[in-house]
Image (cartoon, rainbow, N blue to C red; front, side, top):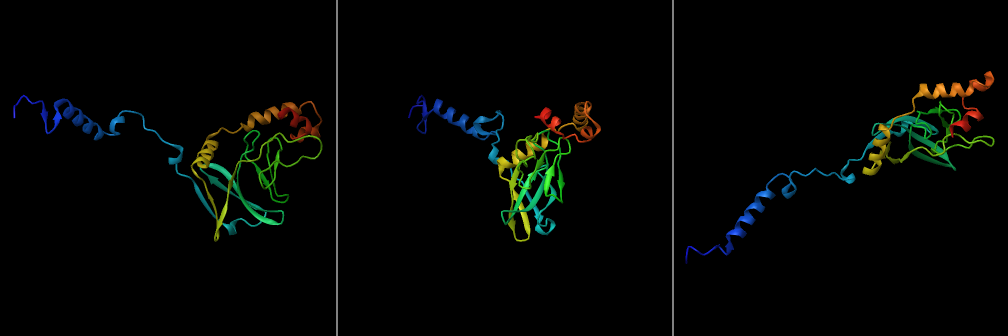
Length: 205
């Protein structure tokens, strides 16, 4: 066989070099995409799981918990003759303020502008012709009962939404209080004491 034959083991020199270079790339970090930004899909994000003993939350009561860094309530309530479990974000959908729970009336109330939410997270009807400043229900997560535990388990998209909400800035209470005091300045003392009066609700819509 002549030494001038350009093929070795059935491959030309060009084919041999190409294959060797290709093998070298696959050994590099990231293979042939080495040097490109790493990509992360939403599905790869781990979900969140919270476990609370059911004995800690009697019927028609709530327990403060945290879900992916977001303040929340674990809620145990009765509706239509049945017991229900639900997790609700502790954040008013109007100005993002934390809520207070009225244990006697079994509802949530915003301390800033007086919006009220039922234990299922929906906005309560307001007596009269006016509506509350809050229009949207609270963010919620499903709860399942596993033996003596109430379990909130988030998938990747729910965990991402909860984490994003936890990082969302809340209303600055001092600024809101100052705004409310300014709105109340032109009315009598009784109206000024009730920051959630009818006139204030209209201005906050």
